[in-house]
Every structure is written in C-alpha cells, then in structure tokens.
Length: 348
Image 1 (cartoon, one colour):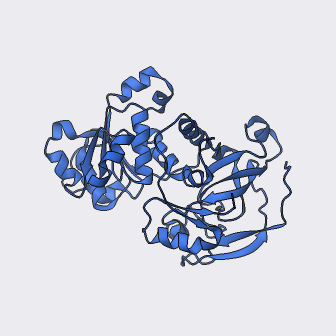
Image 2 (cartoon, one colour; image 1 turned 30 degrees about the vertical axis):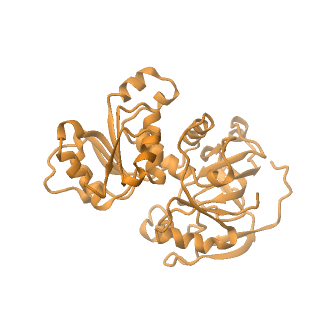
Image 3 (cartoon, helix red, strand yellow; image 1 turned 135 degrees about the vertical axis):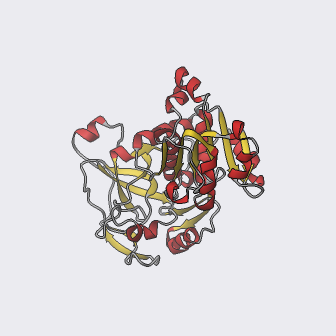
C-alpha cells in the first residue's frame, strides 16, 4: 500500500566487479518486493561499512555470487510502501514513518534512491535524531548490543528496570577494545546502562575522558601498555569475565590474558583462536568471532534508549553527497575515517 507518487526509475550505485572497489551509478527501475515483509523505503542516508566491497570474495557462503551488489547495508529513510497481509497488519509501521535499519549482507544494499527492508529489520527513528545520525547508527549500535548482550554475558533486561538482572550484572566485569570507536563506544555505553560492575575501556589517552563519559570505570592506554602488560601488574583484580574485541590482530591476541577461567572472549574482527597465544592454558566458556544480524526489535530498544536521552551517539567523520559515493567508499576502504562516513542520498 502506498500514498506516495513514485517515479518509474531511480539512481542506483552498483559494484559490477566483486574484485574491484570501483562503483558505478546508473538508472534502474524501482525495486520490487521479494519477501512478504518487504517495505519500500525512500532512502535519505546510508553509510559504508569497511570491507563490504570485498565480502563477495571473502565470504562467498554469506554473499553468494548471484547477489545484486548494491553496497550499503544500513540506511535511514521514509516508508513509501508497505506489504499487504498479516505481517503488515500486526506491525506498527505505516506509510510515512521515519525508519532506520540494517539488512543482511546477501540482501541488496541501500546506495540507491529507493530500497527494500523487511518489517522485522526496521525500527522507528527517534524523534530526537536527524537523518545523518539515523543513517549511520543501526550497524554499530546493533553490533554492540549483540556483543554485550546476545553473545555476551550481560542481561539487557537491566536497562529496562529488572532489578535482579541489574544486581547480577553488577557482579560482572567486561573489557572493551577500540572503546572510543563507533562500535566500542556503543558497547561501553550499553554495558554502563545495564549496570556492569566494571567496564575497562581500551583506548588512547586522548579519548579517556570520552569513554569515561560513556560509563567506563577504568581506561587503559594501549599506546603505553598492552592488555597483557596491564593485566600482569595485578592479575587478581584486573582479570575480567568477558572481553569484547573491536580491534583484532595483536590486540585480540593479548586479550586472552585478560579473561579469567570460564570467561568469554568475543571479537567482531576475526577468530580469537587464530590469535591465541601458545602459552595460554586456561579454559574459556566461549571464544568466538560473530557477525552482526539484522534485528528490528533490538534496534527499536536502542531507539527507545536514544529517545530517553542516551549519551551515546554514533561518531560521524564526514557527510558526502550522493554524487560523491566513490569518494566516500574510498575513504572508508583506506581506513582514513574517524567515525562513520555518511552519504546523503536525498535532499533534506
């Protein structure tokens, strides 16, 4: 159903060669729903994700060869068409709603004027949030939510008033690497909102005040000492129940030394087992790499927190026009962005 007058065609950016990061803009028909929950959304903003132009080559089981490679897995926009049927009737979305979302990698991305997202993947944009933040928040905040709660050790019910959950969280300690980054900052903030007993943030000295403002109880300057060196000074008091790694490489390797027996080690950058020191002999409950999943219900919880005055906002490095799409992706691919690069697909 739609009350909008829709054009026949739209501008869309495609990755024609999965082995090349060169993108091409062309004119194409508006997308047609492929799933019973598909909503048509007029895209206002989207944000590149580092590495996504390589996913089809790196992860062929996740991004099949026949996937239509339009980049941009997260976006924000206005619903212009919703499906008929029971799913739409029982949802709280309607035409005209401001929404943001993250879809799965095998779905078509959102670097186009109109795109598709499923009812179960969307959430309402908080009234306090503009389009720039909305188009760059879903991916980082969902990744943090799932790392802290879904795969992690903290109970999200504590955020919403569950006293028993908050009491239990208060007994637990977590260490977050890359704590001043877009995902790490969200993780610190969510852990603090959930009442974690200790939140150790790994960052550099220039960001200590920032992470403490988000709720970190301690900060470690990685430029002065590694996690292993920091823990070794007082293992009894410095070991943690869980580590959420947002950096990878050598940093992930040193995180093994910080997790106590039976603890949890999670990473969003790679398999912790590949960075495991040969000297490590303790047994962990979990040591794994996880990929974020699209989840509208979790994103709506995040939206509700933002509406209530949450401290954390996604860091934005820069905002570029739709025509500058290649520049935006080049900057992200070169890892020269301090925060998210946002592409304005529509004028607002």
